[in-house]
Image 1 (cartoon, rainbow over the protein chains, first blue to last red):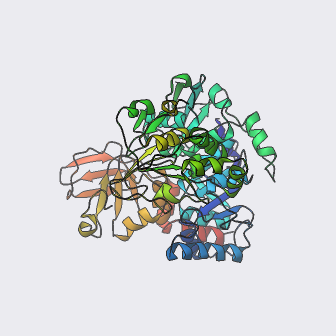
Image 2 (spheres, rainbow over the protein chains, first blue to last red):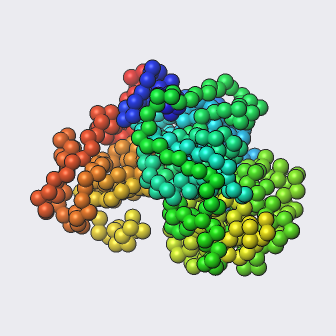
Image 3 (cartoon, rainbow over the protein chains, first blue to last red):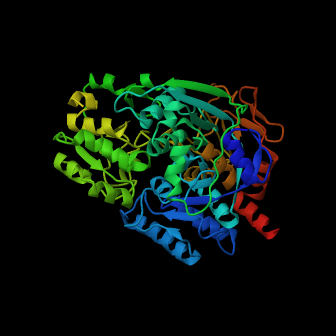
Length: 421
Length: 128
């Protein structure tokens, strides 16, 4: 069996599972946000369960439209807060203590290797970076799981992606995954498990691994997963408050397809409108003078401390172009504090960038940086579908933090190399 | 649906069947998508493939969907479509053509029959 099958089998109480099989499995942790939790709560009430299955294994996180952007958002968050109190949930995260959900839960050690995790948010696949099976579901799935601690799954087929070679300067996990999505398409791994491995993955930091698994859904995948190793152990041992299990794939595990990428040849990569798969080398785009109005560094994809450091390394001693609004959003309160204490805020402010409290905000066109008709942004976020960051006639280009920061300085899409970096 | 067809909300009638291409429902985890389609009176959705969260959300809320990878692009708006759910056959009566649909596993037929995951879970909890 491969790692995904092993985790699913263990949680379904079976010796083995195979692709296509429908199973009912126990869930270790589940989460919802201010958009999806209200429906889940309403469905949970319809089920009529006496209470949640485990008050310590459910996280409700107001992050999408929080801090509450308008009255409707405030009502949604209020509903979550009241439900959390009523059920005695230990993992409700209030503004001031919260973060973007998929950055927050790994940081807090609430999701762990070997876990089976579901979240009413498509980017729940992020936690595969820890060696967990983790996938996005709907609000009704979440309601049923809150009541029973279980969820139904179809065991996915798997694709293997092997990354080798030493990446070029500024190239990181975001470029690896954008390049991969560009190669296989937005439905290239539909329903499937994306298993990422190879020497270049072993060399990747946890934050870059989280970035890669975060975007598995942008290739249509059910989950992205990386077998845990020494880096995983170092990351989770100081955070975990409960036991965890390392799973790995058997040598004879089967895959419907295996792809290999020489990372020394992966360029700084940008996804052009309006699909994550519409990738181009950043260097090529420099020639087209693609003017931008906004640059965003943040989100569950690239709002971690290391991402802010990469952006700051480019911005240091430079100034954001007069025609560009640059918005930096640390993904959690802890990241916010660390970035502040190590002087990154000073660099951002000196460059003329704004720094926001943690929120999903502009990534989904929610608030804190919505685009007008005809405006164009470069963002370290995960989706550039039509209208994603605002007006249907606005455009979003996706990149890593260094490219976004360099573009903010240049006023057009470009690379750190153009700034002599 | 307005992004795909601006006139859709005015045109859709109870009992209609949506016929679509690849990766139908691509986007987010939000259940608002199948709820809106079901609420508009759509009886079923047939597509070459579905985005996976849309797929499970549809079963969970009791919207019948059928995956038919062979579905040709020639099916046009207004064609009369018949679905034989048990036999796994989709007929385009207007063109006299038949296509194979992926069989719906018994577990998911049970979800649809129960009226969705909420009702199914109620029964499950009651039987404990």
